[in-house]
Length: 440
Image (tube, rainbow, N blue to C red):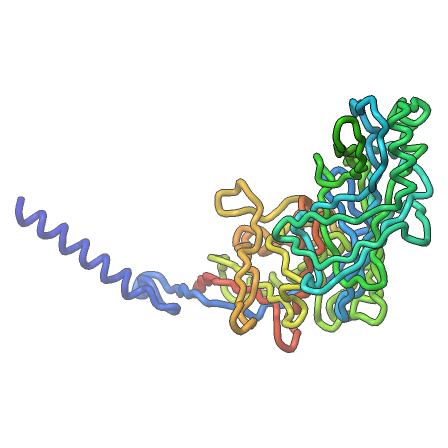
């Protein structure tokens, strides 16, 4: 019995030694009996074909927030946003039975932590009266390409040095006459104005918040709950002076904003409505929330890997995406999350790249080099995708789409400018660990 145990132990040690001897990248197994060779190689020179594709529009309503302001960049152009804010009909205010005297009216604005641009400087925004009612469209959504006419001259000017991350609340005084008129209608319980939401909007169309000449940033402003409202201040005297206030909330469901982009003089000048290969845009591609663009990624010569041996398989594959230095900063932050979708030859989305567990989209695992700004990159595990694509031809070939997640598209201005495989400094790479079997 003891001899048998020793024999088994010797066989285990011998087998382990054989495994260790076969761990090299180039080895033979059973050469005396089977004439074969198995090797593992790492490839990071696979060709990648990239294009930037524009998105016509995004939904900018129903987000409980709006964007307003402007920002210019020599790489991706100038973007301008105008916010359109209607207000809800004031309810019963329970005003006292006294001689009420109007004091002032102001607009309260809460920042929601979204921005692009230098927020350490002063910025100015014009407050304009809308010329028309914001009607509800048939599909009950407002898009970034829509707008509402408003007065050329602002009725007030908001000049501020914002601190968006601290949740600043900004205040701008509106014209007294607007406040007196509104307060008079409320005091008289004028049903021609206050009888319904429609009547009130016909009387007071709302406000537009637009970038003024001294504006070089885009700010996110909350519209839900009491985040944005008009306050009318008044006082009355009976036995002593008493101050009061009427609050009129924004009509959040109909608040939206438009987006206009001018890319003249930039590498992406001809992007609108087109698909531009990176060879036409300075070996760069553009992923931009709100302004609307994403990137298609294709591996045109992937099947050439099949020529490396009699039998081949992908063991692992990583896609490394490097932002172009100088196109991002604290003023222009990179997207925290970027999703990869799978599309067919007609760029129709068919699926997406998930995490290992398969229950969530990969977000890119952004690594930021805050010290030298050199090793900043996104990485994606696309092993399963390449395993399925090896050998695929014709209508079975698939591409990838790199895009800002849908939940963030209409509420941020986050931008990624990435280099393609030929960029002089920041190149996109596909790293493939490949197992090759050669039979002889």
